[in-house]
Structures are given as C-alpha cells and as structure tokens.
Length: 186
Length: 199
Image (cartoon, rainbow over all chains, first blue to last red; front, side, top):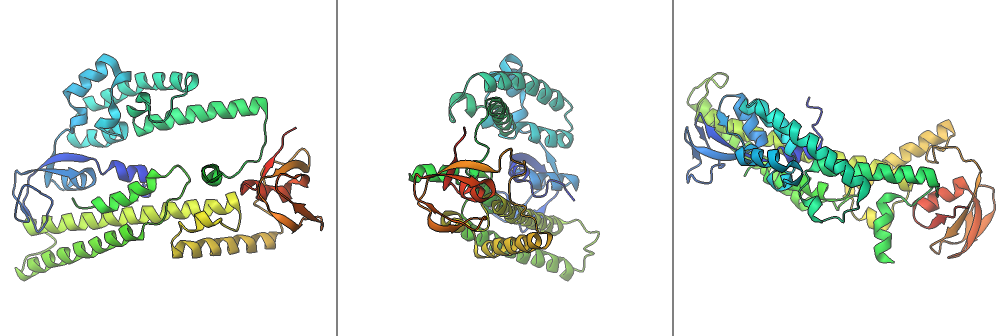
C-alpha cells in the first residue's frame, strides 16, 4: 500500500489540476464542464485533478499535458532569479508535484529544473531564517512553497532550541495545544 | 469536480496549526459519505448496463467501462480523504492524553465528535490500566530531574484541599508560590494553571 496513504499534504497535493486529453470515450460521468451530456468524446480536453488523471493515464485512457507551473516562462524566471519567483501561487507543492508529474509526462528536464530551483532557494531561505524574523504574511512568506515554509520554520525553531539550551530556562511549559487559546482569553 | 468536497474536508484539517484540532465537521463529512453512495449507484448502473448488453466486463473497454472506472477511482479517493481525516485526528487525540492528561479542557472537548470523545476515554482507561499493572506513571517527564522539587507560581485559582503525593493538602490560591514535587506540579503546568519559576 502507498506509504503516504494518510498523508494530508500528499492528498492536498494530488488535488492539483492537470489538463488531459481523452484517448477513450467515457459515459455517465459529469467531469467535463464544457459538454452538456454526461459523455466524454475522444480527444476532448478536460481539467482533472492529478489523482484521477494519473490513474487514467496508467490505463491509457488519457494523455497528460505538462502543467503550466513547469512551462517555459516559469523556467526562464527561475533561471533569472530563482529566489524571487513566486512558486506558491503557481503550485504550493511545486517540488513534490514536479516529482510526481515528471515520469508521467516523460519530461526529463523537470528534474533538473526542480533541483536547480531548490538548491538556490534553499540557501536563501536558510540565511534568512537565521538572520531576520519575517512576520507571517509578509512578502517573503507569500512566495514560498509548503516545503520551503517547513524548512524555514524548522531552521527557526532549531535556532530557538539551541538558544534555550545555551541560556537555560524552565523545562516545563504549558502544553502547546492550549498555549494560544489562553492568551487570547486573558 | 469529483472528490472536491472530500479534499475540502482534508484542507480544513490542514488549515489548523500543527497539533491543533479544529472542530469535527460532521456536515461536510456526511456530505462526502452521501457523494460516495451516489457514485456507487452510478457505478452499479453502468455495470448493469454492460451486463444487459451481454458484454464481458473483464475485457471490454468501452465508454461505459471508463465511466465506471472514473466513478470507482472517485470512490477510492473519497475513502482515502475520509480515512485520512479520521486517522490524523485520532493521532492528535492520542497525543492530547500525553500532553495534558486524562481530563480534557472544555474548549478542546467541544471540538471532538461523539465517537472521538469515546475513543479518548477508552484510550485513557487503557493507559491507566496498563500503568497500574506495571506500577509506573508513564506520563511524567522523560528526563530525570536534578532536584525533585521545583518552585512554581499559581496562575489560576485552583482552590484548596488538593491532595499531593506526600499526603498533605495545599491551598493553591491565585498568584501564590509553592515548592512542590515535580511530579505533582507537572500536570498543572501542562494545563496552564501554574508556571515554573526558574532560579
């Protein structure tokens, strides 16, 4: 069984839409908004979530097009200034989605694109995590993918733990589940 | 689009901060279950149609087959979303037991569905039973203390007459300070009723 079966992020990521072209006909389904009947003709272009497109592609029922977040303009932008590209609005799970889509569309260049984008952005994120504290919702946050936000937060909490270890402090604290709630009611 | 409601449910779970619960959305949950029944009906009617046409369901790949396939895949997807929703919530609920102890505060209890409340109670009973068998309190801090006593300040009016492990009672009035055994203080601190005063 899929080891990520219960993984929330994996489920949300697989909801990303891709455009596919049907190679077969299908009846009794209402997934094509442009068609009035519940019937899909061969050759019709439909936007499907990844989970459905992937399964249908394995059965040769559809062919999958490369999603727009890996198109030429994005590639050029990443080459020009990778740290400043807004990947979140293109796809919040840019890297994971890229890994899943690459073997399906058979595009070998996606791998290199992901690697080079991640390498250069990783450096930037770590430097920023250790030097500046960005408020949630600032511009810097809004361009990061989910993975990168995790990285940023991990780097920050690791720094905080290190400081706590060096300076000492109370060992016991209120359970984090309750922490926020209490402050707002006081 | 198929499977949208189910994904919405999962997204709602993810929108809470890590380790925090949002209220169990039984409306949306039931909606997804209803969608599943609908997909099943449509799946069955497509299969029946193929059977009436005397086609071999194992090998024929016609429009009805692909229609049925799409319904089937959507069912599997919806099931995954529902399972993940319940599974991940259950994990948080089990962690609550270790983090804040056997009694849940009101504001968290409200967020649980009825079944989840039962689950928590049974899990708590099972843990208590196990601990009484092995005669070790497993919920205390993992790191052995340098000093068995710690200084604490009371943040909430807990009241008096609370029995401590050395068979004495203490009056925990708000803002009073005490020197307590760590094991006694831990549960109050994790519930936010006391804070540790560091030297």
